[in-house]
Amino acid sequence: MPTWILHTEFRFDSAHRIDGYDGKCANLHGHTYRVRVSAKSHTLNPSQYLKTPDMVCDFRELKWASKDASKGGLDHAYLNDLLPVVTTAERIAEYIHQETKKRLPDGIELTVTVWETPDSWVEYTDAD
Image (cartoon, rainbow, N blue to C red; front, side):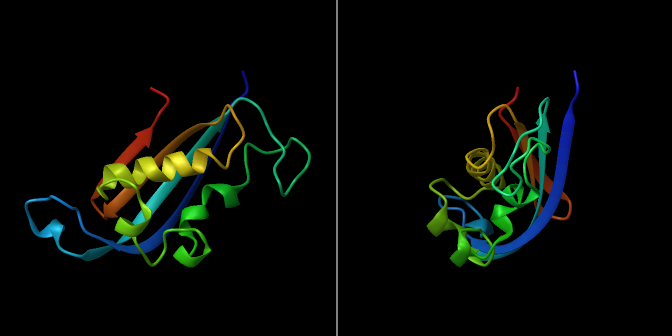
C-alpha cells in the first residue's frame, strides 16, 4: 500500500505558567517551542489551495500554530489564556494535535512533537 509521510518543523515563542505546580514552573516564564508535525496517509487529497488530489495535506495547515496569536496561532501568546488545559508540554502537544486534525482530511495519521527546551520534548499521537 502506498504511504506518504509529510514532516515539517517550526518554532514559536510563548509564555505560560503551570498552575498547581510545586516549583519554579508555577511562575510566569517563556519558551521558544520547537514543533515537528508528521502527517501520514495512504491516499492523496485535494486542499483549499490545490483542487486536485495530489497532496497528503498542505504544509500551511500543519504550521498554523506558528502564526502570531492575533492570527490564530500560538506565537507570542500567553498559553494559559488560549489552551483549555494545564500548559504542560504534554498538553501543548495534545492541543496542537487536536487543532491540526480539525484542519486536515480524514484518514491522516498525525504525530506532534514539542520541544520545550533543546533537550526535553514530548511526542503525541492518537494512532496507538
